[in-house]
Image (cartoon, rainbow, N blue to C red; front, top):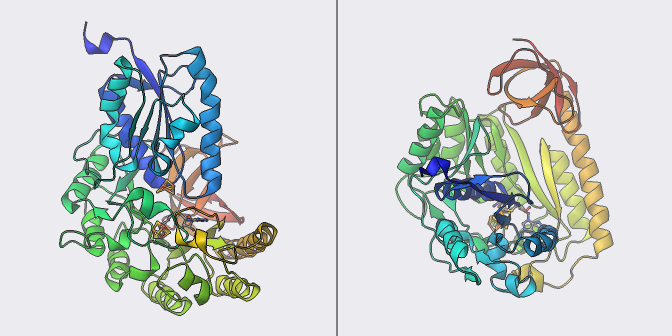
Length: 443
Ligand code: SAH
Ligand code: SF4
Ligand code: F3S
């Protein structure tokens, strides 16, 4: 019997967390296909269920525990079902997950993506639990099969891990030290994506600006130039940029690049020096401001977005006021705002003066209100102007309304005419809103 006639086994992979997890999941899916699994969209029809997890905030973990609980009855109905936990929470919790939920068959840490198929095959024949969270350097897969989520936009990891140890953050503990992929490998992956019809790539790393510092002679600016000149690529994005080492060379590369998009996600996290210092972010509001000036001078069309945490231990009213003031001054296009979440094992979890929950929540509301006003006002400045948009397909609620993104990463809704997914069209903004822009196609 040929392999193609073999009865298929089905997997369902649930992904939580950041883009790095989405990218990992694409590689995990690619590997599962090589051992005869096809993707299914329902948990009930799966022979293998995986949860690829995040533990950056407590709320992320709570969601995963909820899902783990839901899967218990499926395992009771079908004892042959294989159930595994991977990703950051797997790394952090290890066998404690199985003690808490014995219906989990295996737990694989963040640097064990390559072991997945071996472990799954083991589970198919033997029962018992497997836990592997050893933290050797991640073996960077070369030519690993990938089942990509998008059809025109591809995630391309350029480095794994983080060396920064911001005092609130669990990522360096669960992802290990910075480890860059070879530039030639990255370029090869981008070329392959383009050959498969991809028009946009997003280069991924916890701190892309320190790309190459652990290894070769290619730095992030060089890499951007190399990827920009891949034949056929239309858009190159990258995230996340840490303000402490976004160099002038990188700014110049973006300025000069033909396909490098004018969008920088530049998490400031907070707007007072006292808190930035306690967070171990290494820059000050003055150096951040100077960086933003340099960026805006060289790349006038740039759109800046950010992340902010409220309620970090020791935050006082005056720190918070300064943060609001800083937001008014910098005027980010948009911001992801988070309530500080205590992560045990990080230095901030041990700090005194943890902020009261009610105060945190009130501050978060104020921050979001202010940011919404700023976003709306910046969007209003785009009214009547024409932008290049890559059509991405029907919007969620109405099939005749399509969505797409500008180079600056603004979400645009427009009435569908004859364009296909992946087409580049020109859209004139007619109705700017807080979260998105509505417009009409002009060519
Ligand atoms: N490497 C990226 C993003 C890491 S996690 C960076 O440095 O910007 C994404 C965001 O989650 C962070 O930017 C931060 O704003 C937020 N975050 C991380 N740890 C957190 C915690 N303990 N509580 C609340 N937010 C947190
Ligand atoms: Fe976490 Fe800081 Fe590293 Fe980002 S740079 S992943 S916030 S430790
Ligand atoms: Fe979460 Fe891990 Fe990303 S903790 S934010 S999935 S690196």
